[in-house]
Length: 438
Image (cartoon, rainbow, N blue to C red; front, side, top):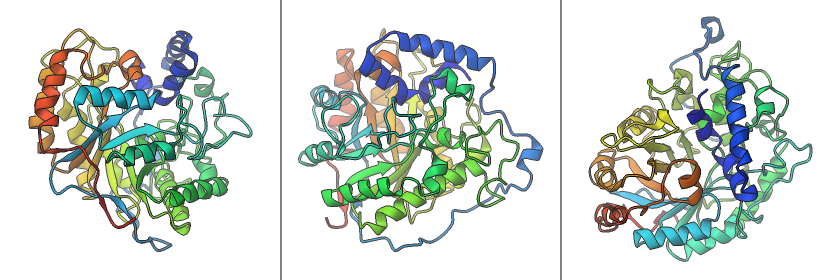
């Protein structure tokens, strides 16, 4: 597993370390982790033939809901074009102000994270489960307070209310000495039902629309929850399909699918009708040339069905191939078509739900303007992906400092390119619209 892959997967962990501690030591920890991991693991190796015995490669999502879905209010699919918004982790209010200043418009959607537990509680025997009344990471505002602030300005909050399977930057985790206490297996056993119900009631009582997903880049989470106890990696498991649920279905994706169903059913029983549910994969999803490709991570194995999910999608990180920047993350050093097209086509075979790109980032080394690729992507490329109806641009200081995604406007001509390609383009919607009644 290369450093670029680990950087991508460790997004939430490193961000919190960066904001809370401001220590360069977190990079040393990451480097040590990667070095040790390289000696012990090869990422996403193909399972042995005996491991896949009995697995079905052709499946369809299960049909039907065990409980009726209440009449709901959710983010509407635009008849044309796409919502444009902001992706931020950290001091989100400051990031939003800077986004408005640089783009000249408010975001229709703001995407961020509010994990079930903090870093410090990740393997605690009695972790504090954070509700939507608790402050967000590195902010003095709760998700519901942020949602209300955005609503008054025509936007909607999208939250990765994330269960994190793994402490990606911990050497002890990779050697099996540090394990989470909040797991998908325990969720499916009902251990956290009271907590889920508490959050469902908070969101129900808020009454206004909000977007939720349970996992950040579900394919990475899914590859880590194989085995009888749900704690084995895809490349390590001896049985791909026989140790959980349907013996012909890959266990990791099946657990992720069932986690969505379990939580959404609890929300429905509490009458939380104001949630737009979405799920998204990582960048370069289903690209056979990418190091994380595996046919058993296809969305058909993860998807719970249109009865449960309103929007689907993936991350998209890419470069201007005509001016290749110097990057640590070499696997992301590709054009947008390689980052987006394979996943787009894979989703097309599963559902016609609209696509949301929550983590959308144009990588760069800070030495060259990205104005040309900004204008080209938003004017020419994205309109060809006509089922992409929502995009939130990565625009936050940590992305620039740590993830090689500079803020918009590092070069003045980038703001001019955005103005021409996005701000003045009716294809991109700056206000959220909803279907159903609040």
